Length: 339
Image 1 (cartoon, rainbow, N blue to C red):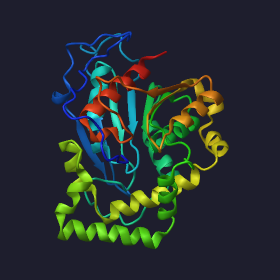
Image 2 (image 1 turned 120 degrees about the vertical axis):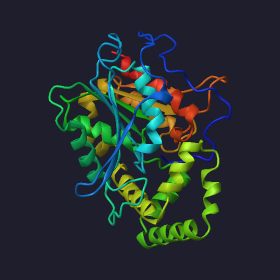
Image 3 (image 1 turned 90 degrees about the vertical axis):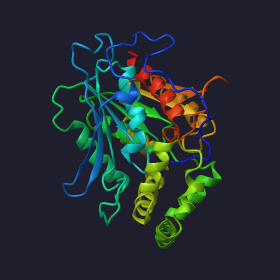
C-alpha cells in the first residue's frame, strides 16, 4: 500500500458491518462482526513464497439469500503486495456481503511480511501471471469478482481480459493504470527506480538503520493504525525495498502508453464489467484520469470518492487506517452488489 503522510482524521467511527444508504440488501444479524471473523493466513512455499488471506463463506443456512451472487471475491493488493495490510478491509467486505461470498487476498509472489529468504525480484508481468493463475485455479463454473487496489486494479483488469468467462466483475480502487506525467513526485520516483545501484543503496541503508536504530521507523509509521504499524515494522527491510522498487520500475515502464494499457486489459470489450473508485488529491490515480476514462469508456462505472464532512478522509493508502478501510469496504460492497 503506497503510503500518504496522513490518512484519516483520528477518532472517526468505523463503518458498521451492514450495507447502508440505498443498497438493495440488508445486513444479516446471523453473520459475525469484523472482530470475530475467523481468518486463515497461509504462506505458499512452492518455488517462491507468497501470502494469502482467506475468509470462508458462511454456511448457506446463515448467509443471506439476497447478498452478492459471487462464489468468491478476490482482493489484489497494491505494491508492495502484502495481504496483511488488507485483512480488516477483506473482513469488512465479507460482512457487508453478509457472508455469502468467500473473500481471499492474494499476495504478490516473493513479497512477504516476514523475511522468507527471497533473493530475486519480480516484474509486473510476472505478478499478473501469478495472480491470474491463483484466481482461476480450480474455479470451474464459480462466479468470481476481483477487487484491485492501485496497481492491483491493473492486474485485475488484465486477469479478466485473459479469463472473461471466469471473472464477472472488477472493482478498481484508486487504480494505478496509467503513469501521471503531471506529477513531479511520480516523475522523480520513476527516475529513481530506474537506477538499480541507487535502489540497492537505499535498500541497504534501510536494512542498516532498522537493525541499528529501530526507532528510525517511527516517523515512517506515524499516522498508521496499530495493525498497519506492526506489519510495516515487520515488512520493511532491504529485500522488501528492492522488490517494491524494481517491480515499480516495470509498472512505470508498462503503464506509459494508454493505448497499450487498454489493449492489455481489453477494456473496449469488458468496460461494462468494470467499476472504478478514485479519491481526491491522489497522484497515483488522479481525478483527471477518471474523467478521461469516463469519456473513453462510457459503459464503465467510474466514481470519484467525495466523502461528506462527517466521514473519514480517504487517501490512496487507505488500508493503513481502520476507519478509511471500513469506509472503502462499504463502497466496494455497494459496487459489487450493483447489476
